[in-house]
Image (cartoon, rainbow, N blue to C red; front, side):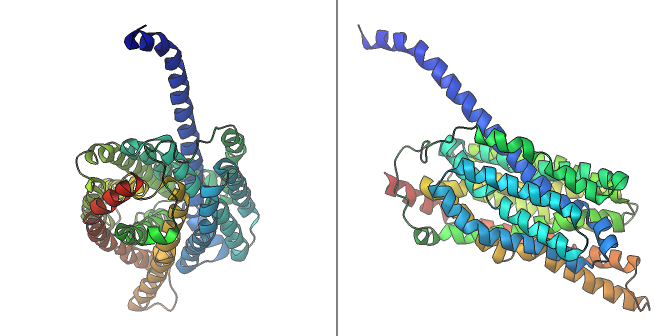
Amino acid sequence: MSSNQSVAVTSPAIAPERNLAARATAWSLFVLVAVNILNFYDRQVPGALAEPVRKEFGLSDTQLGLIGTMFTVVYALVGLPLGRLADRGSRKKMLSWGIAIWGGLTALGAAARNFSMLLFSRLGVGVGEATCAPAATSWIGDLFPAERRSRPLALFMLGVPVGGALSFFFSGPVAKAYGWRAATVLAAIPALILVPLVMMLKEPARGASEAHNEDAGSIWQVLQIRTFWWIFASGALVNFNLYAIGTFLPAFFSRIHKMNVSEASLTTGIVYGIGGVLGGLVAGFWGDSIVRKRADGRMLSAALAALFAAPLAYFGILQSHGAISTALPLLTVAYGFLNMYYGLVYASIQDLVAPAQRGTTMAVYFLVQYLGGASFGPLLLGTLSDHMAHKAAVAAGSQVITEASRATGLHQAMFVIPVLSLCLAVVLWAGSRTITADVERRRASAA
């Protein structure tokens, strides 16, 4: 029998196996995307409920920001050992436990009777959610080869805008109808479905999608990669902006554009749902296309996206009451450009390290970016808002900070977002200048 005849005989048997494998891969990706949607749904609940929570507990913008900041600090610190665990243990079990923990602590927030109890519940959510990115991105890296990773990673990171949009779409209206505590309980329910779904998945072998087996090396070798330091800095800047937006955009719409909690939450959901989803999809398809032509294409594209976001965010924030028809599309497109970061830069991270280092590398990335600046986005913007509100009250001759002064303070503080978007563009451009040599060095070492 000729070799051609042999192929013809075996192909029918191989085809069903490949189809089954492709369906299993697609289902695994679907479940992991659903997990990340819940991840960011629950993460954005405090932002969606900021105004009713602030008024019930008598909080300042600094305290509202502190909730987000303490969450990210705990997330970063716990994430490092969890990242190591994702590279050595069962990602499936780790992710299942994480979902159960953050779902339970999200529900516990409904029992809060003061600021301290609310803060404690959010810290617990941070511990659980720290399992998600290291385990899931490492998992996806083993499902897809390097030249096809932008799209699945961008799809996974659509959890940011989709989860945020759903959180804002549901939390605000539910809070208006039944109170903010009911909205918190609602956010926890999907965890009951996702835990068993994750446990039923088949976890891929580490390095399954790679052409060569690579030694894991050490994390110190990762830190010697020049491009990573630019990526670390970019993570701090982009997440400073995105966490500040998630915390204060509903309050911005409420105070500046005179919306109630439901209207402000739904409007924020439009920004996340339309801008974020379109930005993520464009990043995924464009990232896989451009990387075939030039190794620095993803980083350079992310730099251009950040550059375009800056003026759009500036003019969107500039609009005052009565100009929501102008402000909303500007802020939506600006958010879309910022959200392109994930599909482009996360795929670049996967290109730079060995498969057995991906979980740890993502954990280190989160640790450095959060403790290096991202965690302070909500706190610093809230503190700046309070400072500007105090100045506005003094200028108006008032001895107390009125709601009008709070609106002025937040409006002025939000202009930090376009400034940092410009800084983000510069940092990403610098990273694009070094990534080609770093990727080639890693591939040469693997070969």
